[in-house]
Length: 287
Image (cartoon, rainbow, N blue to C red):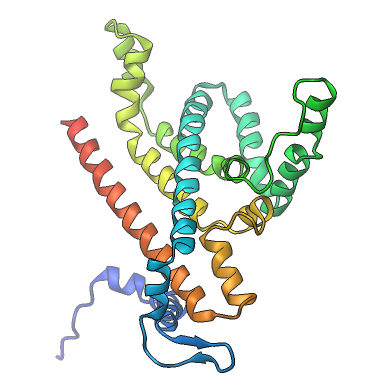
């Protein structure tokens, strides 16, 4: 009897998703990378000749370099703020009674049910130069002129932090749900201070949740488009709005593709490096 080759189960399970992955992710990425090496002419459009002109232009032009640094700076600030506010909020949620926990989880998840454009416009109406908060402070004599919010990095950071905070809270809260509360009680019964329990018992065990939340927030902040486009406008460009302008305004698709590829590669390098560093630190803590 002829024996058929044994196919490992993981390959059978991933086989249906493989064509989708190749068609809708790998092929478009490969096409974008190839497009970044084409040149562009004002009269001819895209010229299918392989050249590194776009890459050299971005690396040598301070305008593009500043936009890329601004993108990473904003993403880093948003990630830090989400860590500072999201981790304590997740811990507080884990200690609440079920009724209150459900209510506050709904409050946390509520913004996710609203369009990011609507939320960003809400911040613009609230903190703009003619917004409710600025006008109220001017009327009360707290400030003489409205505080700058629109078209500033601070405005983009505040709006993105509000948009992405739920992802950090949910990621950390999921890790906290896997912890055994008796471990904390045991540490407290042995005389450890609450701050020591948090730092030596709870925090090391939720590092994976913090890492995954930080990765998600950083990646989404660096690649965000709607919020920087509305709050930052044309005065404060980031990588995503720059690529959009190159594709749809100047029609320089190769240069826009180059910006997109550089952003993707930069995010991959930063995320993988941070992942390795934090994993090593996590292993050292467990030892």
